[in-house]
Length: 264
Image (cartoon, rainbow, N blue to C red; front, top):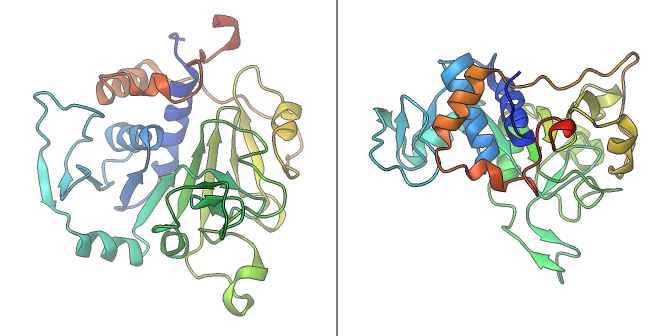
């Protein structure tokens, strides 16, 4: 096992989120999801469509930060019309980084506190409402704590979740599909009873009690021993390094901890 950081472990695991998707648009928003989408396209699913972050579909993932001499190989035009055609028809899987999530998978990127008089104003709901009812979504949180995994509902619901009380007419939106949650502590999904958030794996050195203590609602846990999140392979680490030549990933999780506590 090559030495790696916790962020690299998360990126490698996050890439598997797109491994079995069909020819869909893979969108990773913020550095870790973007690197994960690029890793998925490079090693696991060449059918994925990716963009250069501007107006073009690119053959290969575009590295983070200043590009130097890198020139993407263009495969096609990606104006808003084509992007939204993919989005509205369910041919997109996004991984995003909200600031809050609740037990229903409802997320918030808009405000902290009351919307009329917030403690902090953030991005606004932006495209989250439409994204959530048209295509699958996964999530990344760099700091797993009760400020992010809140008790009750998020301060401002920006994205539909598995909360029938908020579904129009009580009917689940046709394409609502929430998949993975990756944090600095663990991997979770929505595979519990009635789409409850379920523990999938624990990162090295993390216990279920630590995850639960940092979560504002009960986490479902299947019977048996919870597996450890797999370490990234040498090949995965090489691709991650190539896609992030300026080591932006080292700034994502406080202190850039190692992938295994004993390496600290």
